[in-house]
Length: 319
Ligand SMILES: [Zn+2]
Image (cartoon, rainbow, N blue to C red; front, side):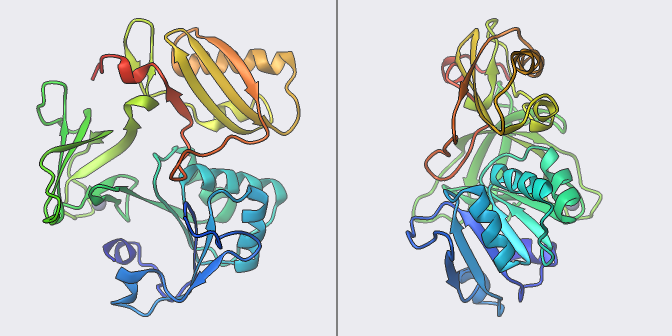
């Protein structure tokens, strides 16, 4: 509710959600329809309709459905929003009623804010939550960073010596939910990393996280043991080749598999340039192999990881 109020949403508007759901009826062409936005909102305000489609629906079918529904708000995973925005950019179709995209469940690729603005003329609002604790931080309505929801959860960002990180430093996210009486968790390590921020000029006194960086398995591990979060934003690669979907998997300290879904087959020259760009992003001359597919599936729960390392889990965390 606080997020809706911060973002000044029109609660009478139509909310379209494209997310993971066990409901088998959330399929094209119609999806499922609800009479309100959800139990917590409906108890306090009269809300507009909610329509929902499963995240496993193809981008073409999602786009057709969105055009028919013409929602005020779209709630979905960031990688799905990016694929949809690219689709609308290509077809030139529009969503005239759309006011905002709401993101959940994955880390935000910085280009997503720009493409939502460019293609649909709307802002993107992100939130940071976890199944074990619920809402952890909400994007500030005036900035791209996040405010910790301190009334319901104590969030610590700790360095490798277990000391609190100063603004600008990155560390492990450790949480203590304050209202979970059935299953108390004390200093529970989520497995995520985040960057601490300083006080926000908006005047909200809640502590700030500037970046949420995902999990250890999303870090690239160099043969030296050094680790970092790779910048694998699509904008770098789409300038080189007609890539629809891409996932990079690190199998060993020196080898990388690049899984690709492409509009047209790549030339050896394009593959060569991609290898150079990927090595540049990952900051190491990895051996790169390409695998082509019709579609790269999401993991259980509907998430999509642009970079996954099978090496990182076992390596010493360098932070
Ligand atoms: Zn703020």
